[in-house]
Length: 191
Image (cartoon, rainbow, N blue to C red; front, side, top):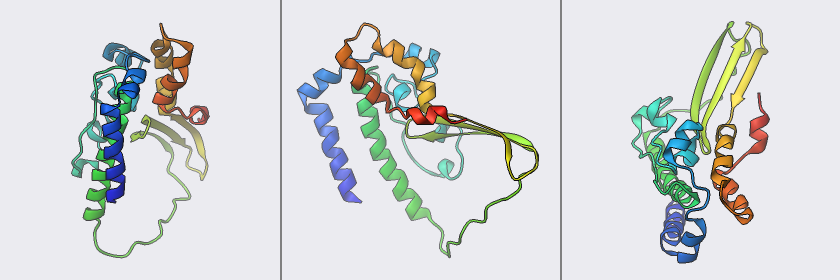
């Protein structure tokens, strides 16, 4: 829908031109590219520090290998950089949605039939969630209930970076540093 692009373009202009916003977010929550890699930061937290990594491109699944999109990175290494990444990712999302809609095959859409019993074994899969790489591990014993399920949510991966991002900062910076990570703390309890 054009309205989403228009609103996002407006927010992009504000983020790039509004001097008070730029001043408040710049040099806050600094995370170098080296620290982002060392601490295993994920998603916009890592890409806002110049880490060019995205599961959709690096390990494509489903239709991602057939889609054209850009992995948005920024090298400000701070809350401002993470803000610019998130805005840029919105525009990429609109492009992806349009490509998927345009590429849908003709024909009926029917209900999915759930699999009630899974063969014994184990699987690990990962995908790019809005907050970063989400990893799922499942082990089956051949029944209709999994023997083990473990989820590593992106928030959990990004938590070690928070301590680094808060070093040398002010107490007033804590809320925006944490908000720029877009945490889902309940997600970290899964698995």
